[in-house]
Length: 95
Length: 256
Image (cartoon, rainbow over all chains, first blue to last red; front, side, top):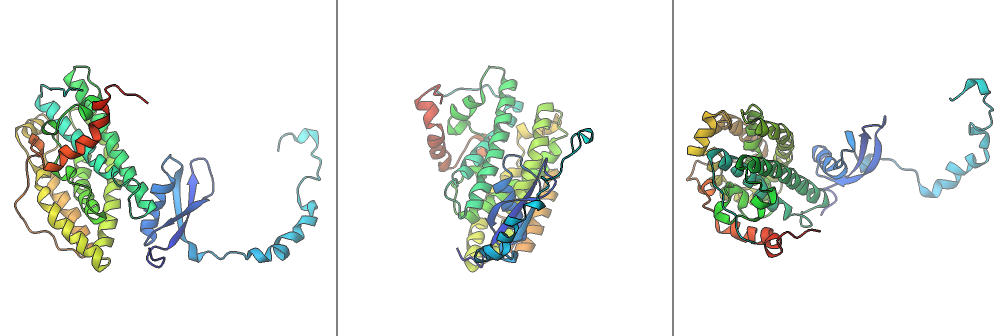
């Protein structure tokens, strides 16, 4: 099947309980309308969804795995960015 | 296992016709499982098959209530022979290619969507409740098939050729959708079943819209096939039932 005729689409579903759409997988489809149908048939068979987004996979700009070092390693030494150094006074209770 | 014999009333016959059409078409669609042109369609077609199977089960259950002989839905599905099935002929034709399946599903859904919409007002409360559920399902079936019809008709040379062939084969089977015999008349009279004549304009509008978008010619008026509602079938139904009924007939009461 020619990729040009049946391009790949990324599927995002907002679940009953979720606030945001989450990436669930991808489908092949000729155009956006068919991609929505395919996503409905493939990923909402068990009542998972209330809303579907489809996005052409080609429209996604991805980071290069080779850039892993410069992109992500510098944060490893900045543990103070994690909100785990604060003592919450007893009287504040559950936050 | 021996074949069951029913004493049919018009009401029972009417409900069995609906149930048989849903079951037989469901089985034909299920034949795509593992064979569809792409994984997404494999799921889409079997989803539709399962919707129709669900409708058939509710309708057989209703038939069992009407008959009052303590039968189960399985008895109607597995223990009747071809001449006892009252499904529309269009449902029993072999699976065909993908274009054939899409054209059949378009015709069937373009009729049954407005049918179930009207049947929600049936004086038969159980049928009205089934209609409530079926209407939403068939609305999606029509959207699915319609979208494909447009893309196949206005697609490649091959998809268009196959779609035109399917239209030629299937159009003569659409007359049966609108057939009203004495059973149909009694049901319209009693407010149980909608009058197919009132469905005709909606059916024609749907086809006009889809055919225009697909750039397909509307099939010319022609001689129409008939017989399914009376149990007079094509050669294909018996073969289908042989496969479908083999297990419960060979091993009565089998469970797994």
